[in-house]
Amino acid sequence: MSDYEQIRVERHAADGTAWIVLNDPDRRNALNAALVAELKDALRVLDADEDVRVIGLRGAGPDFCAGADLKEVRATMDEGALASQADADALGELFVLLRRLRRPVVAAVHGRALAGGCGLATACDLIVAAEDAEFGYPEVRLGFVPAMVMALLRRSLGEKRAFELAAIGDRFGARRAHELGLVARLLPPGELEEGARAFAADLAGRSASAVMLTKRLLYGLDGVAFEDAIRAGADVNALARLTEDCRAGVERFLAR
Image (tube, rainbow, N blue to C red; front, top):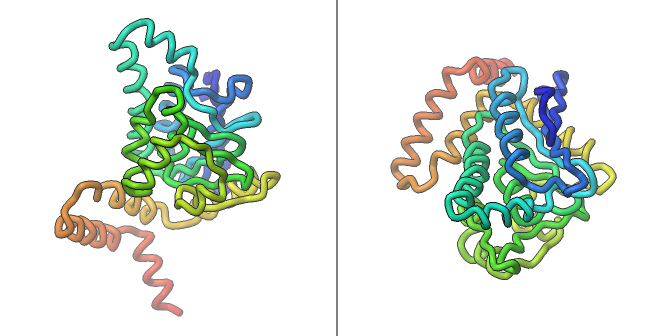
C-alpha cells in the first residue's frame, strides 16, 4: 500500500481505524482515473484487514475534494462515448463498493466537497464536517448531471429534496448539510481531524459484527417489500445471536 501516488493510508492500530487521505492538494484532490483506482484498491485492502474496524476518508490541503478532473472529463468527451462510459462506470463502481464494504466508512469533510467530491462524501456511510465546510452538486450549472449520486440522494433525502439539490445546483454550508441529514456531526474547523478520529475510534469501539450486520441489512433493504424486510431483519437478528459479541454482551447485562 506504499506505492500509491495520489492517496496515502494511515493506520491507527490502537483504536482499530485506518484513514485514506486524498493526497493531490494542488488539484484540490480532483477525482481522476488514477485516484479513483487507487482509492478502490485501498478500500478493498483495508476492508479485508481484520484489525481495521472503521475506515476514514479525508482530503489533504484546503479542500476535501472539489469534484471531477475536468481536463480528464474533456479528454474522454473527445475520445467518444465508450471512453466517457468507462470513466463514469469507474466512479460508479467506487460508489457501489463503498456500500458493499463490510467496514463502515466515515468521511471527514473540510473546505469544499463539490460535484463528484460531494458525491464521494455522500457515498460514505457517515459524514463529519467542519462547520465552515461547503457542499454542493453544481453539475447542472455546467450542463452536466449529478447522475450517479442521484441514487444516493434519493435514498438519503427523498425525491423532493434530492431534486432541489441536483436541479438548482446551489452550494450550501455544513450547517445546512447537517439540517438535511447528510452530515452526522459538526466540528469546529481547527478540530476536524482530531474530532473525526475520535468519532471513528468511538464507532470502532462498537461490536464489529453488530456494525457489519447493521450496514449489510440497512443497504440490503433497498427496494424490498415490507414483509420481506421484516423477514430479512429476523434473519439478521437470529444471526447476531450466534456471534461472540452478542453472547458476551448479553452475559454482561445479565450479570449486572
